Image 1 (tube, helix red, strand yellow):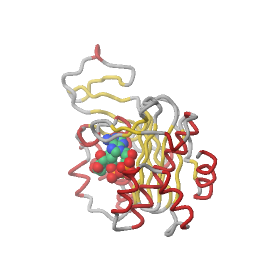
Image 2 (cartoon, rainbow, N blue to C red):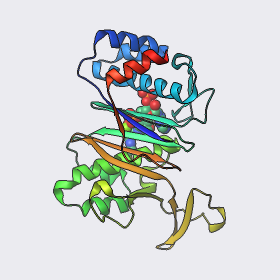
Image 3 (cartoon, rainbow, N blue to C red):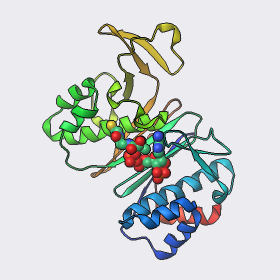
Image 4 (cartoon, rainbow, N blue to C red):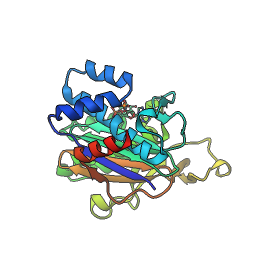
Length: 263
Ligand code: COA
Ligand code: MG
């Protein structure tokens, strides 16, 4: 079963929690935490690993401190001894989000919402996404930008190739284009303009159709998109399986209890 957990960080962590958590993470993470100028960056980084370790320990039965991680060529972490246990973490602003479980590739992204220059979208989004964004009422464009941004990032994080996949080479848009309230939309990813692809080499995770004279691949990935609060957008992606209806909001006290039990 795939779960999404979201943890809201306090401005200041109790010392006892912080020092315990620091002893729990990898040496690299401790060293990185010491180098951050802003304490909030250190909290996000360390708590992201703590939530990951606790959850993966519960999933695998391996004590949290004994879990070791490696990364693929693009930086996506996996467990060394259980490389097929899916998980992915994201942190931004006041929130940390972790997706874990199931058997498919998963990715998650949380972004703090700020006013943005919509020209950024023109640089990074596909033409189809830009058309969708431009058709939104002006007062919804910033929010929609973050929805698309987090969805796109959750997808590249699920497939694990980072930004080596050009961001304008795929479009994530609602099925049936924009019917109904944004929070209830069902999102779908299409990889655009793959002229070399034929119907014979499609895999289970995609179907191929002709659109405007080129082959587009409709990916079977599932998506989740909801704001966590007025200032943070969350998106998640799984290459297969059911995503939960809602994230599980976890508190720092709960994390600490699980941490003590899982040591
Ligand atoms: N695939 C999946 N997960 C990855 C990853 C990869 N290639 N590389 C790192 N991660 C994981 C790590 O666990 C990392 O946390 P850690 O460094 O504390 O261990 C976590 O993802 C960071 O995710 P997030 O908090 O969302 O960071 P980010 O938004 O700064 O970075 C990446 C996102 C990792 C995908 C990175 O490739 C990047 O720099 N992206 C730029 C942002 C962007 O252009 N997004 C496109 C949206 S349209
Ligand atoms: Mg991100």
